[in-house]
Image 1 (cartoon, rainbow, N blue to C red):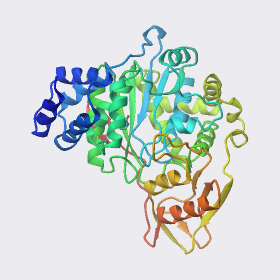
Image 2: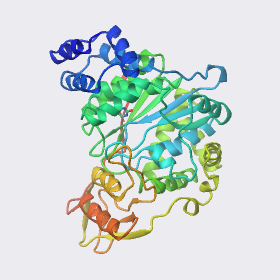
Image 3: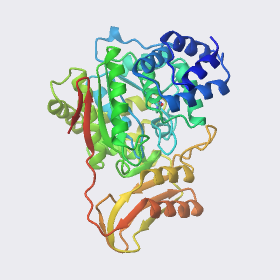
Image 4: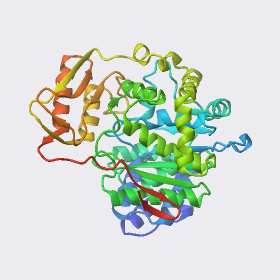
Length: 442
Ligand code: URA
């Protein structure tokens, strides 16, 4: 197959067949096409799109380019959650051990920081010794033993997606609904799931800020999951401001542990419980979301979720004492300072993108794949849209490596926290539920 024919056809608005996608995925995984031609194809797709059949065929071809986990012998439901990404989104770190403690098997495959968003793998690696690079065989054995593994995409899982994703990142072709849907679903369906819950973010800090586009993304992924026999539900959650208080790597681990101890910010806890309830219902461990929440709250209250995290950290080479005394175990920023309000007013917005880019500027994220991440830096965001402040009210704490970092962090906070005089109602945290029957407003 000559890739130039596909490029020309897509450029002119034509379709690519399932057979062609299969050949493409096999050849591209084996380095059979030069990146400049694949880049041209991606840009043609950016402008021309893919229809439903093409999207499914691309997903299927990428899924079959690698291996698949199989837990059918376990006799317990295997369900995962995936988030489309945001700032302060540490839900996976709380949720995976919590639902595993309730009886689910969770082979959770996460990503690294991408653009302005943080990545679960970078956060987990803030725990000294924690190894996210398990092979498929190691992850499978851990899920069989503990009910949960927290891992990254290996070269064994959807390798065509792994290569294509890196190229999209470098060619400004990430924000294409069919490509995002095919990419996410090819990886998730490789986990051998009985159910999947998607956290699709909307709002200023989401990759798809507009609700209608985010809903289309959710529906596309739900359709793919259902077509593959994997019941899939999406919740649309707010990313107009950061989730919770902590934004950074080590401090998000600390906040996750707070939530597993029964505390933590209300919004982090609420999104975790809502997604967890969907997972337990899909797994048929609870008849409805209300009953499921009670199971989750029990596992928080009696510490089973926290103990499951301890077991996972220990199994993956991390220091398990992190769950008892996070600050003693996690790397701490050398320089810390509060940024306070200069004038009285009402917080209008807290811009997640500005804070996300701020974390990168402080050294807590990457601008190239080779960059080292400083896990200790970040922000504790102490105000929300609608918060009334007086002169001197702390807006955020900056965690940096030195005085220059504190200055960068303060400038970020002052630009991210937009003040005004109007009363503001904080946007709803969870607005829609999308399932096989359609979109339901909550
Ligand atoms: N996450 C993925 O895994 N793939 C995308 O295309 C976007 C986000």
